[in-house]
Image 1 (cartoon, chains in turn yellow, brown):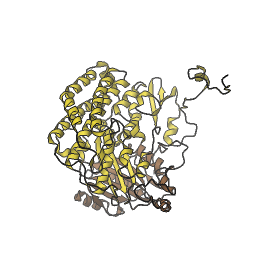
Image 2 (cartoon, helix red, strand yellow):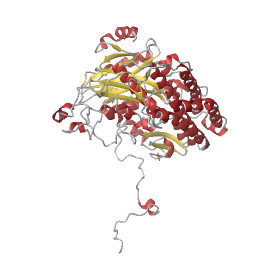
Image 3 (tube, rainbow over the protein chains, first blue to last red):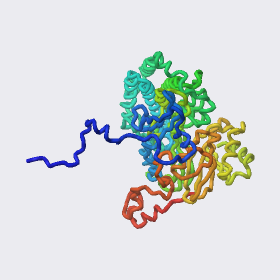
Image 4 (spheres, each protein chain N blue to C red):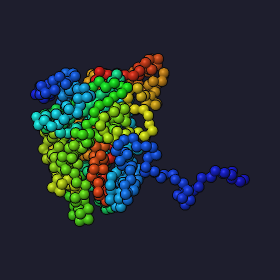
Length: 411
Length: 182
């Protein structure tokens, strides 16, 4: 018996002709329509000796799916235009069509590296809509897990930062640290990445033995481990010289660009929502808000600031463990929540800056409007500003130092 | 709640406020006409007694009957968030002056509000869609834009599981464009 004939056989994937004949997967840098805005007209106009280069959307160092159109002159970046939306899922619309308890699982995948903070701000906003008092033990558990999540996120940042500059070793070390914390959080939340742990009025479960033994084990060597990991980079001359004086951001510009979080503090502005607008039990805890900016807010400042923040997070975790009160971890709430009509805004300090939620209730079981403010979205806006007149190879370094996560940028 | 801030705002912006100053929890809320936005914001930013340096958020809102742009500001001079609502834009042609002159960082947030609601920010020099493709024609976060698979609207659909499942005839009625007094 013969095989049926296949008149329209697809060429095999490793047929070299497919690369020559087919234009699949190639992006035209210049859009095929007339410019819609002043800025677009200016950007897509080539000057003498200039050309376009297309980065992404599948470039490995873009921390997600981001496309960047670079306008270059030789090796120098003249201008660049980030093109967003490749990960856009319409989370806000989904939230407006889910009931209040359900929203928790919708906002989780926004910034998949720091899911707890994505949950924290909506949950806080809804608690304000409902006028719910959260038990103190639940607040302490939130702070404890939140700070663990912050260390996890910063550990990954350090690895990625080095990886984007071409250093392979640090990512291996930071993944060890990250995995230990992920396992720890998995033992309390049940999941390693999208924790879905906070609830309106508390948290999903109390601290258990597995979590505590892992945490105690890790805390004995966390500080030393962190020191060792950072020494790998801080004393690496190639790394330091590459980062110094690159992508400088001054205080005034940072504030005008509405930047928050480590990127703002690295310019010398001590703005931290935990202190500037205290929430949860942070007023009871002792910690410093580190700032940097001696080098003029360059990439090295932004890196070193995150190193400092991990130390403060370790301090907070230590205090949480010592001060943790007894009691319930959930407030008593009905299964179907119908807040009175009203508006609420809540902001928390995440590892990338301020996560905020603005929620409007119309008295039904779904929020009428839910706005999610994401710090990565704002930070990414800085890239065209910081990249002017730098080298093409530094694009990834500057972008990595701002630490955007595309899941949050694109919502 | 910062009662002092309320008094200062009333004294300063008196006739420009289109509604009463409201306060709840740690938020103070004022309402102004869209055309007053640049002036009021500049005063809030530049006046050292207000000193609202940080634009914490910019959100578009479709209340079902009209459009709003909601700004949240932060200042070290008050423990409250200040919410400024530019109110009463017609849904057919919502227009508000851009804030990019004061906060260049508002540019992308305004692009997002344009993309999702079709609000025109006059003076923003890069007002194109940011998430949706350039040939897209609708504004997805408007209240008359239903989710493609919104089973609640199909008679007999039971996505709203806790209620209404026994009265499929009302299911379509229930989701007629909601409006809110926001």
